[in-house]
Image 1 (tube, rainbow, N blue to C red):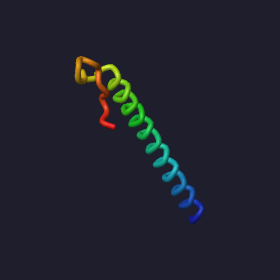
Image 2 (cartoon, rainbow, N blue to C red):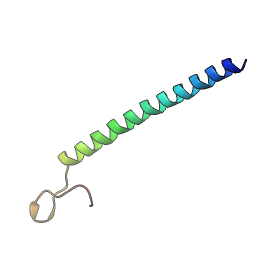
Image 3 (cartoon, one colour):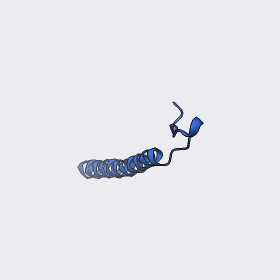
Length: 56
């Protein structure tokens, strides 16, 4: 009974880790697209020059 519970627990942990990693990949792709769009859609800075879209 204990080995069966250990196998089920291991499967649950691996499934949870796999799901979390897949979700993190999707979040990383969304952030990358937003970052790349920031270079294309930049607001005009002072003097008609294209400014930076980030604050730092």
